[in-house]
Amino acid sequence: MNEKEEYTFETVWKSIQELSEKLKKTDEIVNGIAKSNGDMAEQTIYNSLERDMTFAGVEFEDIDKNRKRKSKSLKLEGEYDVVMENGNTIAIIETKYKVRKKDVSELLTQKLDSFRKLFPYYSDYKILLGVGGMSFDDDAIKEAKENGIGIIKIIGDKVEYHTEGIKTY
Image (cartoon, rainbow, N blue to C red; front, side, top):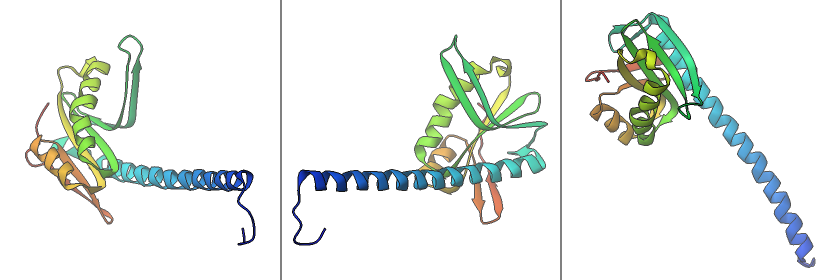
């Protein structure tokens, strides 16, 4: 609008609607980038684990990506980014582009608890937990180390494992 135009309800409303549409498109683009970054982190970590099938010094025989289960009777569902198993041990690895403290806390409480309920077959298995990503909040690293959760960092084209002090759950 130029200086001489009047602002009417209709012109302001039209401007708001146009802005709203632009914001929706921007939101879709940003969400798409975030999802792509998360997918890239997950795929990089999965590929690294699949290559040597070892986590925290434990050799595994099988690896799954995006293992899902839903139980109507339990009214529960879960998805696990990477699950490795070897006959007596399971490793559950949660992947994010940026790992935050809440991601570590959710893995330790909600995801671990849900896994045990959704997959009773593994009730006698030892469970190792890990979080992986391209960047980590300091609080996330501290939370993981305090709870014996392994850390997998993507640094450039390399993947680093920090599993000292890892606990069995």
